[in-house]
Image (tube, rainbow, N blue to C red; front, side, top):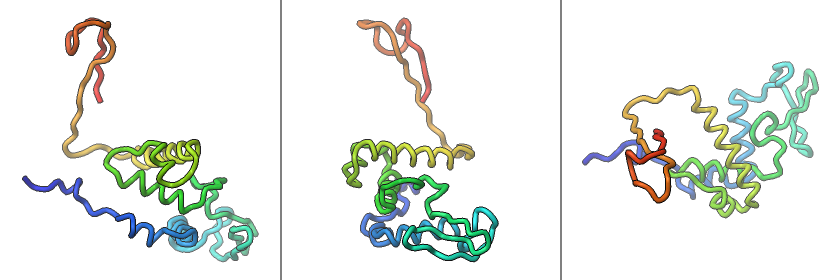
Length: 167
């Protein structure tokens, strides 16, 4: 039997991930290049010249003097969690075939349960919005099941008061 190309696609190992995004500076640089691939662009006036105010970690436009944080307008806005932990959370959520619980995420990145839960839900929302416009193609499998019924009662299909649903 041939290997499933989706299942065996090349991934990013944890050591390579940490080599690429292991420090706060590496994460800031990656986020800068993802947010502004052609260099900084002022969100107010569209100017491309700026200066960096390192003490406050903001970029200031030379034309309109608007100050913009690298994380403003992103899911990282107003967070106190370091970018290294956000990037690691993204890695852990996207590299597994099955989902990661908030408790597993808490242990994996070293934050409180509530923080891990909020981070996971923000990231899952972003992933949902990214995939929302795409249509399924190729082989699609579905399954049906029944929920409800009386206990004790007849198990399986055909039992009274059971509602079918598809997943």
